[in-house]
Length: 191
Image (cartoon, rainbow, N blue to C red; front, side):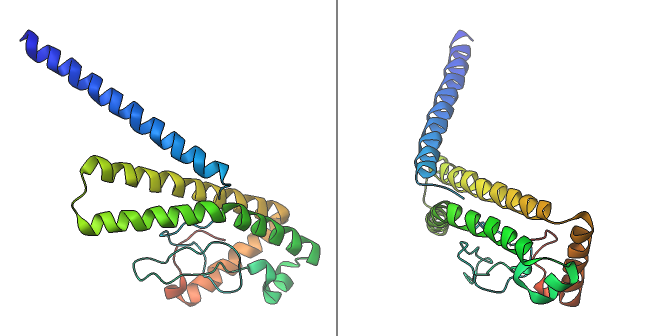
């Protein structure tokens, strides 16, 4: 009985040490990436608005096919500008928010894409030890979460440029756009 208690304590300590080592390795990896400058669209995650137009923003994958979508820059769309009563100054402010995030997040988006490719190879090979695979999943998802957080903050900054009635009209525009072509609707979120 004493031996089994000792093994249980040792097992718990071992799991604790492994957790600390994995966390320390993740912190080092995240620090390295953040030194390189971070943040953008999340590769492998469905964007939340139909996409179409130029952009320097890292492009999210639409899924398994590897095709990519470009964010719809609604603030540059003349019909949207007219309907919202969006001034050229406000459109430029929104574009500046978008472009800054795109530039800042490109290194992180590239890193997520690279790590996700490594994870896909590990998945297809199905020979990797589960703990190594788990760590790769953790690395990908941790960095991807930072991209999603950055995107959400970008959207908030964009919406703050608009007046409340413009935000309401913008939501109506998105609803009309999505309801016309449900195959164009990757998600309910708005960009």
